[in-house]
Length: 252
Image (cartoon, rainbow, N blue to C red; front, side, top):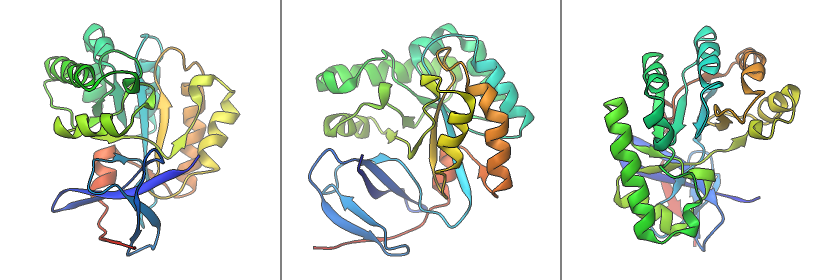
């Protein structure tokens, strides 16, 4: 699979290296500092998938859309390992599990939106996409007393329309550069290897805390310990993005 890398400046202090799957036509860019080839989208909205960083820092991210058995043990493990992460939660789930949302925030983790209905946005028209994002936003604000600024569409499914709608609602879409594939329950060793054998500075790692991910918590302690031994530290998505400063230029 090919990925599109691009930088999207949201504030004067934050320039982000970002990427999306190669879904649409774009012009080539180069990041001046690292000379990494990326693609522009003619100033269209983009999805953040990785940060180009000199620091050995990564973000573990967890999707939750259903169940109540796996999240708390995962939170316990993260706390024991002193790891901060970002949780993308479905609002439908959050509404029914406010106590877990409270625990996520109490432990210092970041909260992101995973939409309301857990379905593929790419199958919907723009008005339905907008309504789902807005519904999720309202519920998550009620449950968490916070405003979420990052969106990971259900199933990681997005296209140019989804990006555009999310942008009009002031959301940045967060994808990932490493997929642990933990939701397939491939075995603890495989989950660990999927991450530690591929990790680089600035990676965003996809994991799950839904009940379908039965082996994630078992894999976490060794995964985290292995990465720490390699010198990596862990942060929320916001913290990871805040450390990136680059400029770009278009190459014809």
